[in-house]
Image 1: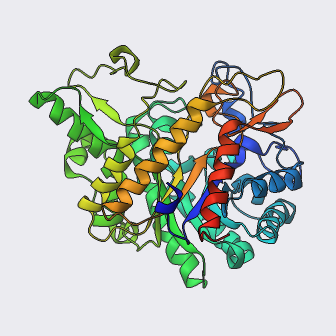
Image 2 (image 1 turned 135 degrees about the vertical axis):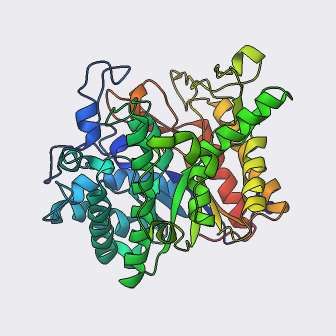
Length: 445
């Protein structure tokens, strides 16, 4: 398979700030909405928090060496807004920024391209106290933050993505309420989604005006939505699901409009859109990041469709393991959007019930197979004409898995949460060997 990827392909691993960094009360970092959410009784399944997480802030050099040992040529990470600007407005925190300076310089020293995400859900709590993303002012605070990061780090960053999975931030955080800040209000969720997208477009414009040299874009989570049966009602349900989850974000970015059927369905809950907003949302991007985990099977009844109940393979998240869906969604995006920018798979991976052996690496052969099958799915999409220029494994290491706490492990590196010792699993060793072979055949460091 390594011969099917070009020499300039980006192979990496991915993490996010709140999930690994820890040190939440150090170096002037402010409180985030996830710090607050973790302290709500019942919010996190194992009642844990991100106070220590993987202690990445204190183990930076060790973790940089770990990343380098895998042979990847890029590393995707996110910057914690409250670490760089405690309140989300006003003074910036040089101590916090210094951590990312050392991270970026350490990656470059090891010949690894830094791929940064500006917002991976950890909004400063002080902004949430003023309405958070439901308040249009937060859009402008994000642009200020993006400009500051670009000014101090942009010359060394290979790629900058504004947001990670705005659907999760809007829907899970403000409609379903199982992510921070834990709000359950459809109208607020719709407005939040628009403000997230607006902040993306304005940030791209501002960073470019400031002379950005990095490749700029956004990261969306998506998978194909398919009907549970060939019945017309289920087909209609799949179309609606696709419009709600995928097209609600990709249409404004690439067509300059929201799906009309969803606007009509929302009615009075539809977002308030000001003159000129949609043109801003359509600001050209240098890349589109796609996070893929599974497909969505829709039923007109609205009942949850269970892959396990149908005898299909699932991960520990109860998500169907369906690598063909990655090929399908990439080809669907190319078909839907003639001017699709270069695509990077910015997250792909699986949570499995790893068993730690007495000695030697965790034999996570299910995860190893998952990665092989999904990387193969990328090659099929490329053969069908989709410009996919990178693939990043989620995740570098086991970490804080949001509402599941530390109970779900996605890492290709095992973390012992008692000692914080990192140990590469069988999947990490396979990935390392794969990249070594790819490089022998001309792949670039």
